[in-house]
Image (tube, rainbow, N blue to C red; front, side):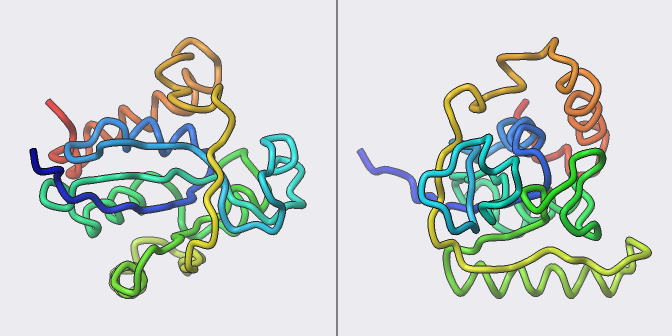
Length: 182
């Protein structure tokens, strides 16, 4: 049996629970793991990252089949589900751990991310400039088990009901909903 080719993307756009909830629903996405990247502490804990002193961002690492969903599609979703113009903040979540970041895995991903940002800036979709950092992935640390599939496992938790559920609903009504699994 031939294993399909997969690619990996690592993205930070605020709370990893929000990103995971949407990427988990996309055709061609095989796995989404919440975790931490971009910091200087080895094996950080959630509480350390929340303190804002480790340098890590909350991220999702997405394993996807590029024959079903392209990296460009992954980036389109990314820029549609968070505000890439707010430095170290997404909504009420404030701190460097909530920064907008693309941690690339290859020169091709770096070039695609930089091109996407240039194209979006040219469209002037936001009144402020995009502050998304584009940096190479050094190390990815999976978050603690209770963070994985958080939205699926805790649908009645208040953050899930009042923050994540509306983001998922908004995405379902967007032009990118074509990427959702049936």
